[in-house]
Length: 143
Ligand code: ADP
Ligand code: MG
Image (tube, rainbow, N blue to C red):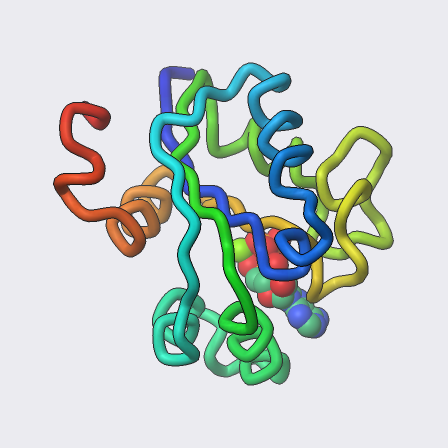
């Protein structure tokens, strides 16, 4: 294990619930460090690009409409084993199956409106960080 970075998105459902502060607190309480963070919003086209891996799935249209429906908070999180650690903190995709102590249990609604995104590998984390953050925004932060 080593220091890793992962990309977190607080999704439009959680933003609308006014849960941004609570979710960032759960993240920092877990020991992960927020090294970059901003509020933004995706167009449908950007959401289709971000979730291109899911384009054949039946829920793709719904997912990209949802993800572009309102503001989001994107963060780069850093820490020991950050990819796995953050996915454990998020809980499973289906919020209804998420255990106590997870973000999705606390703030998710169902399998789609599940409050947060987290990268699923270190390689994808790099791609996802570059999707949202410019070189200048990351200047001096990423080794
Ligand atoms: P995760 O976000 O846990 O990595 P996936 O990568 O499988 O999950 O799916 C990406 C996102 O697509 C999920 O977070 C959720 O918002 C949505 N999603 C996944 N499965 C479904 C489904 N069966 N129906 C509707 N939306 C879904
Ligand atoms: Mg995923």
